Length: 135
Image (tube, rainbow, N blue to C red; front, side, top):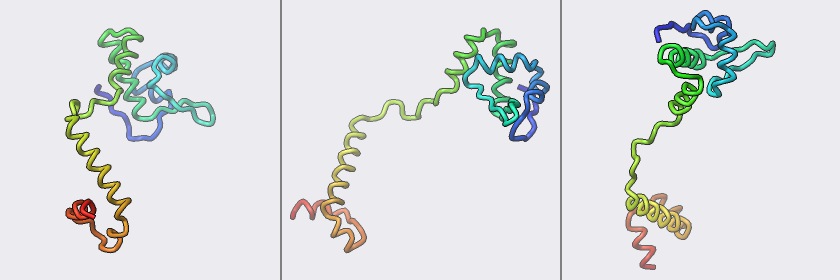
């Protein structure tokens, strides 16, 4: 967005206004309209913006003034954009998941039933499952 944001923890509303070239009253209004814009107040009541919130102000300004969104449209777009991205495995192999779940349950049962044998050796070998079924 072309604005150099200084490396600081908090920014007062005047600094944000100057950095983003947005009037303070507009920033206060946006604070009421965009739930994602969570500006903290200091003990003296000063609005304190974090870097992420300054970036969000720039994004809101871009949506409203350059892309022509309405406030409602920008709010919806930002709500949609801030959702967690989809995980890379959108279509999990249900059969594999069920098989892994069953194997984990078997292993847990094995550990509960044969805990003494594991404590003795300190290792669970691959033959322990078959050996415990044979007993």
